[in-house]
Length: 275
Length: 324
Image (tube, rainbow over all chains, first blue to last red; front, side):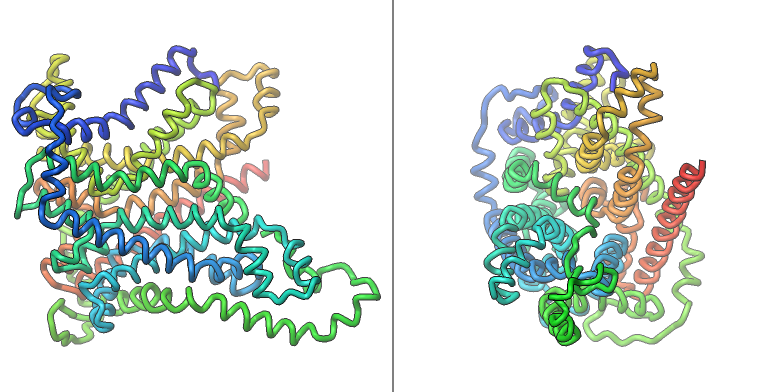
C-alpha cells in the first residue's frame, strides 16, 4: 500500500506507537513516583526521583500477595485441567466428520454469542447447590469451562495439521489407537499445547467478571478483584502503590503474550482457515 | 475440513482395490468401536460443558419467567411474561440498551478502522515493525482491571497527562473526562478501542499477508491508484476475515464488563451504563434474579438479531458479487 509518502507513513506509525505504548509507560512512571510528586500539578513522564518504595508498599498491603497466590493457583489448575480434557476432544473434533463435529463446532460458535451476564445468574445458583460458591475450586471449574471453546478451537487446528498418514503408519505397525495418540500425535502437538496453555493461563489470570460474582470472602479474592477493591470505597490506596500493584499484575500476562506472539497468530489462523 | 481422515470408510471413496475387500466386512463393528472411542474422548469435556455452560443457559432462560430473588431460601413462582411486560416500561433499561449499542457499534467500527490502518502500515515494509508488533500486543495481554486503573490515571482531571498536554497547547486542560456527562462515554469508547485494536490488527495483518503480491503488481501495472488497488484488490480479499473479526468484536464488545465497571461503574448519572452492567446491578444489588434474567434474554435476542442482519447482508453482498 502506498497511500502516503514514506515520511507520512512513519508519522502515522509513530502516532500508533504513542497511542498504544504511552498509557503503559505512564503507569510504570506513576509506580516509581513519590506521592508528593503524584499529587503535585507538574506532569512529567520521568520521575524527579525514582521511588521504588511503592512496590514494597504494594506487596506489604494485606491481600495483594495472597490474592496473587489465589490467582496463580486458579490459573495453573484451570489451565492444566482444560488441556487435559480438551486434548482428546479436540482430536475427535479434528478427525471425525459428521454429527459430533458439527455439534462441537456449533457449540464453540454459540458459546461466543451468549452473554455471560445471563449465564452467571444460574451459574451462581448451581455452584451454591454443589457447595462450590465462594470457593477457588468453583472458580477454577468455571474458568476451565469457559476456556474450553478457545482451547478446543486452537487444539483442533493443530491436530488437523498432523498428517493422518503418520497415524495410519502407526496403526499399520500394529499400535493401538491410544498408543498412536500417545506416541505419535500428542508429541507433535507439544508446541500447540504450550501455546494454548499460555493463552489459557493469561485468560484466567486476567478474568474479572466470574471472580467478582462468585467470590465473596476477601481471603478468596483473585488479583483483579483485590486491585478493584483498592480503588473502590473501602481501603483507598495511594496512587503510587496502586500503580505498582497494577504493573505487577500485568507482568505475567505481558510476558506470556510476548512469548506467544507468533504462535497466537498462526494458531488463530489455523483454526480460522481450517474450520 | 480437508483432512482425509477415515476416507477409507466413506462411501464416496473410489472403489477399493480387490485385495482390500476382506477388510470391509468388520467395518460396521469397527465403526461402532470408533464411535464409542470418540464418545469416551469427548466425555471429559462434555460434562463440564453440560453442567456449567448449557445448564446455566437453559436455567437462565427459565428464570426469566419467574419472580426468583437472590435470597438464602429461594422460593419463587412462575409468572409467565410478567417480567417482560415490566421491562417494556422500564425506560432506564432501554436507555442502557441504547448506550450499549452506541458503545458496541462505535468501538467495533473504530477498532476496525484503526486496526486496518495499522495493519496496512505494518505490511508496507517500514522499520520499527518489531517494536510496533510487541507494543500492539500489550493492550491485548493486560488484565482489564489494570487497563482501567491505567486509563483512570491518564484521564485524571488534575495531574493527568492528557489534560497537561491539552493545557500546554492552549486548549482547556481541566476536563473531568470520566466524570463529565458529555465526555464520559467517548472517553470509555477510546479505551475500548485501545484494548480491542491489537487482536483485530493481528488478524487483518495475517489476512493481508495471504494476498498474493502478483495481484497488487498486476493492478499497479494496469495503472491503478493506491486507493483503487485497496478497493479492488485488498478489501475484497480481506472481506471474509473482516466479516468474522467484526462479528466477534461486536459480541465481545457488547459483552464487555470489567472495563466499564472499573472505569466508571456506569456513571456519571448512568451515562456509561452498558446493559451488561445494568443486568449485573439488577441481579446482585437489587437481588431481582428473575427480572435480571429477563433482561439477559432480551440482550441475547438483540445481539442475535443484529448479528443475523449483519451476516445476512454480508452473504447477500457476496452472492451479488459472484453473480456479476
